[in-house]
Length: 327
Image (cartoon, rainbow, N blue to C red; front, side, top):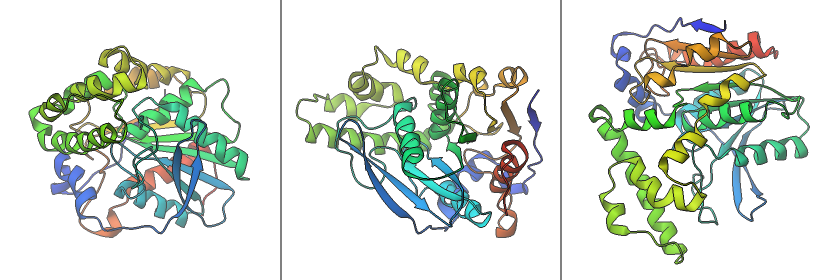
């Protein structure tokens, strides 16, 4: 029954889910000097991988969330911490998220695990690592869990485990939750970024006809999915996309040590994103829920020395459950 009771106890201000969510992304100042490697995909596009190498035999593949990148603060802080513990890292910038638009009309979505599979196979074929660990945040966590589950019978023996944070594993209910009034500012920020990208795609690909009036009026993810995700990626409807892209149905298939950490005060997540039953019935899928932490936050206090609970939790799972030696 691998369900963990969390030891995360932040100071007063950081017991606010909104404050914890905003603090990491807005007020933390960490940066990372990556080595970028651009790889060409099977469909004549490109993916940018950002490496931070120290000469390890273990590589951690990091996957960011919606409209994030290798510069997202949770990616940077995890990268730097894992480097200090003797692990190499590489961030998979999802298509269109590396600072340069990708070449094709299609970018990414919550369930596009064919890109994850391509990147993993590239790393296995071109690098001599003994171990690879996958870590995903939010949308990237959904990709990670779905990939590990759907590839359970064929996954390479070098893929030793996964860790995911703040994951809307049930996309339909997660979108409904994010569209509530309490999340208005977050939703507007996401929609603004996504609308700009859709307009840029429409300008580059005249054959892609998007109703710009409907796009401008869009106030829900479902509106953008009808205009872009469904026609571009071949789904029948937003509901078809939600069902096929969600990681939750794949959790029972996971066969390597894999952790999901979700906070009860994460305003992006619905009750359906807390898979106690799936973890209780699994030997390999671990679930930990915290009372506090927000969305990809998990900051304890204003003092830097106490701000790394999440990084330490990731480190502990790697050592104790995935059983890889760290410095």
